[in-house]
Image 1 (tube, rainbow, N blue to C red):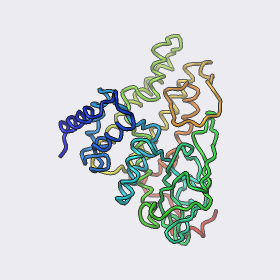
Image 2: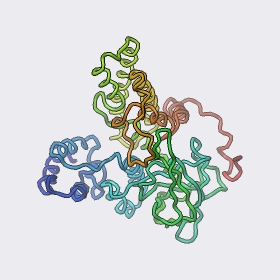
Image 3: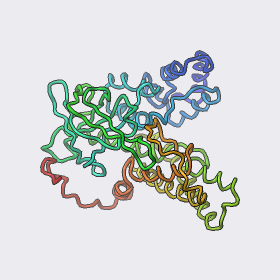
Length: 393
């Protein structure tokens, strides 16, 4: 078993062979992956050493102290947090070897082609079709709310391959090349003025069967791995104490005493405690992941993340008074990443409105917590045994 001492030794060997000050950034990241120090809990040969997930912090601390470059995880959050664990669990050996290394080092950015105009909260109702022709699948349909599609080389895609069975049973999971003919990405301008989201049109896109992930018709089960990891990635991110959205509010409170009132003080204290409880709960959830794949508990973390961000950003705007109504720039941009803390209060307030929609709406996540965590009876579903083609749309 690989332990902390061995990981420190391996990390120092990496730094000695590839000094960060004189090594090209991508070359260093490739060497780190090949040394098994990218994600230590992954298997050997795939960027890991089969070590405990909790030991990743040992490697990260050594590399940070040496000033080594990282892989800019925010730029490829969907790839790292969602595509990679799904490929690891369901991919063939050829798929793992082909996709995981360029994904981790950031050479290839990923996006997610799941939601559709008529299939958001009810994702299993999706209508994008994939029809097999020999060794290829011909895909037609429309996806929406696709974060980062304008920067992505690859996409994780679910499409309907059998309309004659109930909606959950006729879905298959694919890896889609965003540069292929027939893939069109259009920006969706948001309330912030930016367009980090997109709609994607798929017209006679040909996907080789070798890019199918999992069995035909088993896409819903494969997608659950993606979605569970997505909720953990969003709601369970690692933060320092007083990190995230609470940080700029606390900073303003300390530096601007003239803005303080008793009521605002009481509300800030409550939200500070809530943020700290959420941070520690996320840490515990990540420790539980050492034992296996994420489960429905991630839904609870994502719920708390959305509620806290919206309440904290609302308090910040109120604390700043007239200043809180200002907005830095309405210019239409297509950013590479979302930066909550590095922007102004107006941006945080507007952008946080999407937190209760993206990654699963709060309403859907409440159902998941109720049914899969608390064990409450599920809501009646009259369409469970009805063929997708016969559903009312």
